[in-house]
Amino acid sequence: MVTKTAPPSTSSAGSAPQPGSIPATPAVQRFDLPPPAPGTSSSHPLVLQIEKTPDPDGLQIFTAITTCVLTALAGLIAWRQWRTSHDTLRFSLFQKRFEIYDATRIFIGDIVMSGNTSKEGTAKFLTATLGTRWLFNEKLASYMQELYDQAQLLEAKRLEIEDEDHDVERGKLRVQATNLVNYFVDQQKALNDRFKSHMPTIGA
Image (cartoon, rainbow, N blue to C red; front, side, top):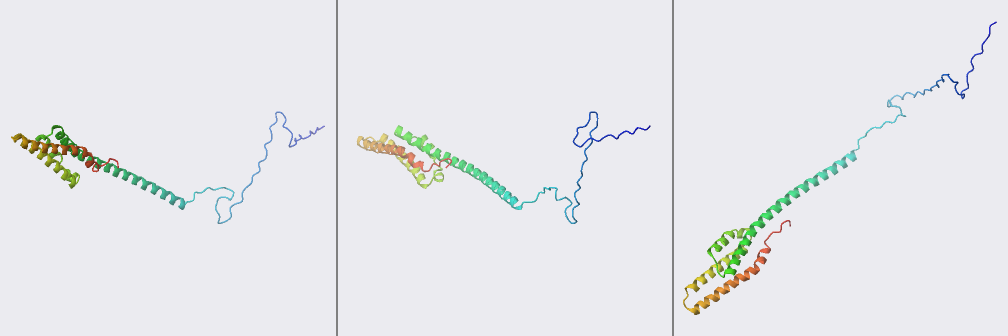
């Protein structure tokens, strides 16, 4: 007798697999996209494409800003160079003018202290003030000449006092010499005011 074995029953879709059995692989459904229409891009409409498109307005703005920044930077550098050169020239002028001022101050101070002039002091004064006309102006150059003339007059009065034998005349000469010394005292007080307006301020 032939025994018919019943075919193995398949488990329902929701039943758990039996121990030792290999689970069935679920079927994969494939969805094929339809081909692109003739004359269109090969990329499918559902595929996102990111393309870089030129932005002429943005490029012009960037170029303009860059040009402005570079121009401003170049202008700042040029201004700093001019400022440095300007201050250097003013400082050089200040030094040369101060040498004349200092020589004049020493010359007047020596006369006030001693009541007379000296050949050495007069020679130093003349040498130091030779450039007054070009470094200052004609007015101050004339003032330097006036100081020299008054100093020479004072020296002449001192020599006359030494040579004068008459007391009366000698007294008159001494008064004149004293007046000349007082002239230099007044110049000593006013010297700063005469030079102040001609001395350049550094960094101005």
